[in-house]
Image 1 (tube, rainbow, N blue to C red):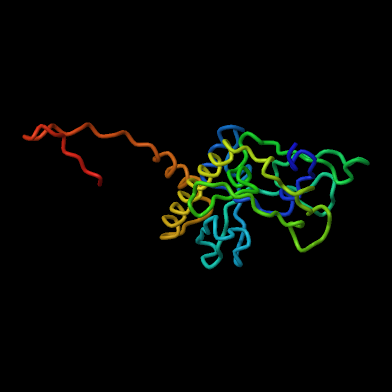
Image 2 (spheres, rainbow, N blue to C red; image 1 turned 180 degrees about the horizontal axis):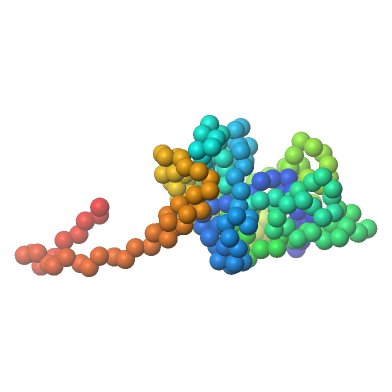
Length: 225
């Protein structure tokens, strides 16, 4: 049983959850939702959301504000004045779980940042590192923002699936950083961002051109360009 199995999901309450373009399109397809149903931009002037990982995007209406693309938050059903990831399913608090044990409502389609938690790749990109999770997600010591109920152990991590998930997450965040570079060359309105995103991702697959005829040496000309 992993620490998540008995958790009230403090991470889904304390943090803005960054998403990549691939995350967005996967959720749109899997849940039949539109972009505006679950995506927002969070201002991140001090970089606490991006954490040198997620890209910053800029937009015409606030050209000097760096934003991170995230899932929206919604008011908590049981904890007045607090919010949570809009996909978090809250359970009614009881004596055993006074805050309530909550669950991800889109577990099979959850963002890559959620897949990766609490792991990262080592410098070689081959080994999985289990990092130390802090006790609290915010400076506010409200138990609502406490994180994992117990420390993660190596035995909690699948040695086959974890590296694969991390490698995919690493690839997608690198690609999304390239997407941000393209967008930020000519920032436009936030309202046109979904269209831009779909154009980029719909062109990730291309058909290989037919091989050129063999030259006089009997070999097929090849270019790495």
